[in-house]
Image (cartoon, rainbow, N blue to C red; front, top):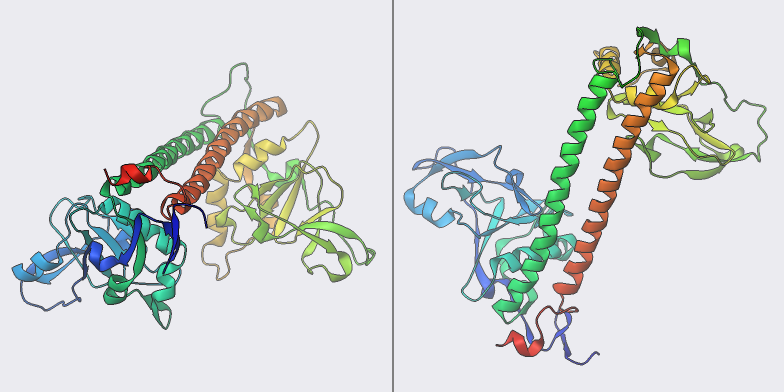
Length: 419
């Protein structure tokens, strides 16, 4: 064991930390049971639908009757930590700090537990500690599961032993470090949302000809995809050798333009839908649940790639149709409006390759298509870079929580923690 650490009921922790039940660090209250015809006047209350990981949502706040005494007991204050008492097992205990998001006084229903930090305890630190417990399965292990709902239980939560820095100063230092990362994540989320809005506006203007790029003139036409591309040009037939090996892309492997994975297959044992052969530059149009927009611009140049027949494969003609231009249209309003019309009234949300060939798009000259595709592709690349940065920051935060909330990394020197 490293110097300065000790073995405890919850594992190895710093010598100057303590293990104690949650109830010693704060007041624990379970919310009021729903009583539609109870005494008192209507009061707003929060429930599980309002509490997310690190965030309180107030777009769906309900009311129920409460007396003044009840409302005083169940009311939430700025700095209280709210936890989901009843949820699915993986989400039980999901929590956030209440920071007066709702514009008037409100209470909590018994779907929630309220933790109010005692003097000498940082509520913000407690909120991060509880979020860590939820994410690492600590709450799931003590929850009582009935059917599909797991219950954290106010008394079980109150008795739960956790490791705490004795010093409020150290608790605050840990909370501030994690809050800084949360602020960075929030800024990245807002920037990504703004860039997405800009990309959507650019698509609407450039893909319809409302706005023309410099140097381009001439009339546009409306053309069917089937008139300007080849649809499903190559397929594996029954004569394919049983030992033919290939990399297979299923519908589940594609997420809105991103290839999340693939599997190595041999024809003899491959899924029956593994039939459409691919070449670099092919555009894969998801025909099953096309409203999810699980389309892909295929760019891999290794040989022997095959995708599911759940895709319609479009292969553009050299010098006639730009694949990037066609791909961008799959996420644009015009094409998706046509797809929605095809799905209306259908019991199974799907289209077929014939439907895809019949989709119409505005069609400029090849060079203008290429220029438009380049502009939108660059915007996609910027968005992807931002999303990757956000994902790395999230991973960094998870690592920081593990280090800081277990005392493996100290922000305050042990001797300073007692100062």
